[in-house]
Image (cartoon, rainbow, N blue to C red; front, side, top):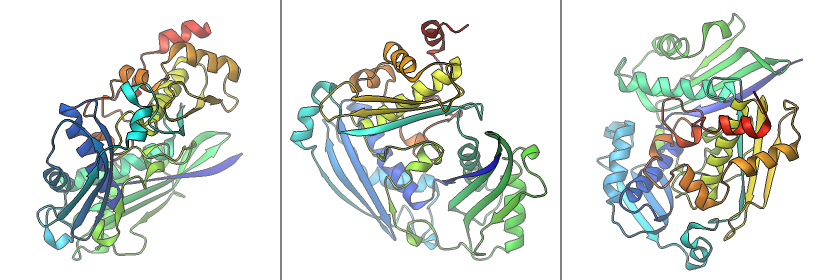
Length: 381
């Protein structure tokens, strides 16, 4: 049986991703001197304006104005004519301390910072143990940013999107059915030149040629024009690209965003742990495809539930897999943070192009360091 599945990604210059990167840059700066800080930072961006809001309890000081401008500059919004640039931004900051009612629950890092459910996933479709559609979608927009920053052409701008549809046959990826690239550009480039460049330097240098055939549909700037972009074209906000951040819709998402949150927030830390568990279990041979759900209650340390779905790809029962998880992996917020070494400045680098499957980064939740212990527990050779 054949079916189609689609995932999307966005560039670092997408307005929502601009906000995610600013929030995580602020978090990273605070964690450098105060690893025990409590940070819940939200960012909004529009024409000429960035607003930083939230709750922060810390013993250190960071220059938020400078962090905002440096991040915007690094992304590539460095000219006034683009409509949003680092030098001419107004930056408004409204930060309070964390609510003492919440602080009670996370005292000494033992309890979860909120209630919630978090999901992790892994499969064998790619070397990174990620679904193939989101993997390709990320690589396309990452390549788009790379060629822009390398100056291969002078007409690309920071904002952009990708979308990849993969055709499956009997559950296995067969071919790429369609590819969409929308990229911001200056007003002078000819459509034909832009299309040729994106096809040759972005698409054909990212997607394996054996997965593209004569029936593969390629759409580049489908409306024909994408001059007005970034926060000038569309207001940005943290936490609006949670499916881009995770598995591209292939697996479930609990609903909580990541960026701007310190590890006491299980939205972030438990999602990272769930991915770490799923990836190690799949790599060890417990299942070919595995989704894990964890739920927590504010102020409580142990998860209130562990959900398993192996999609019929494991010879072990759900009860056996759950027992193995409890035996091999730490699951309290404090243990998760310690095991994955999360109280350090590592977050801005994952605020664009996905938090999972990042073979270009040395991320603790992507390590395959539990395989031996898993195989021993499940008596796998």
